[in-house]
Amino acid sequence: MMTLGCVQMAGAEVSAEETSWMEQVAVDGWIEGVQSVQVRSPHDALTSRVWGRLKLSADIDDFFGYVSVDAQKNWTVDSETGIDVHEAWLEYVADGWDARIGRQVIIWGKADGLQITDIISPPDYTEFITRDLEEIRLPVDAAKFRLLGETVDVELIWIPVFRAAVQPSADSPWALGQDIPDDVRVTVSPVDEPETSLENSEIALKVSAFWSGLDVAVSAFHTWDDNPAMHRTVTQRNGETDIHFSPEHHRMTVFGLEFSRPWSDFVFRGEVAYYLGRFFEPRSITGDPSRKNALNWLAGIDWTPGNDWSVTAQTAGVFIMDYERSLAAEQHALSGTLNVSKKLLRQTLTLSNMLYYDVREQDFFEQIKAEYAVTDDLHFLTGVDVFGGGGQSFGRYKDNTQVWFKAKYSF
Image (cartoon, rainbow, N blue to C red; front, top):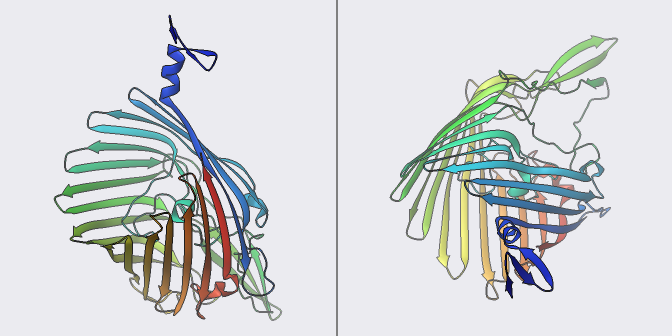
């Protein structure tokens, strides 16, 4: 029933202006619970948390605003419990360009489950790499400006506030200590992070071209290393060794190249990132990190043969220039991934297997997962994360092989 200047609904009167405002604002989100148990004795819970995200968006004329807030209760990592603003940004869209300012997640690259040129948003390794990549990426406080052409886009990003990668905290079952000889005493200073200033800002530039059957992008990122270099001061006294660690983040520049090319049932992908001035840790506990240039690369192929099958295979490597044998890393590192998935039961059940393999270390991480959609909003997931091999890449986590269950409700 329409009345002058109002809309009458379910016994309540809502003005036409309020109705228009409500159409411009959307509220949604999700809540999930995750529980895992260690396969090996003592069968501890490696993950036990409830995590929710409330999302609010508003689309008013040429402006679009977005805010998402996370709330988490974590029973295995106390430091993760709390409420945090995940993203909060405002975007203006014009003819041929747009601009976004605020806390945001920025995604680059073509890789599946690996970060080669996708280094704008630092990673969160609280649970190593067992989480989805969408959960691993951390937002950054940034201003992003894009020029949008018919075949070429230009993207400029300014990050005035540095944010480091997150490593497992001391109370996390994913925190692994370093083997320290009995005659060595270790002390550690607080991490030396860059102060917020104009000269310490990070800046990135990316140019993307889209042609018929080929996407190519080149980029440059003047940044700070997300992980600090562990500098040492070594002192010998009375037959004992004192080592003082001074963690420090350093400047580096990264040049990137990425491409993708579809053909028939396949998509061929590749990425290259050339690091200028990256620090690498020493092999010896008394050594000091060395600054080197390094080349990270990836080649991948996606295959969709039909019948709801999907296969992705990738090979990735790192090559360190001007190599020294004192480094903990080898000059050539090679790894591979294989992701196979299949949808069943009218696409309500998805079975997948993601395998990471380190060729040099000869160890692996494998995540076998089943996801069932009861409805569009309610999903149940279960799986097993398997760590194997005797290397220091994935094999050091072999005691953390786990079986897990997740329930996720979206609203």
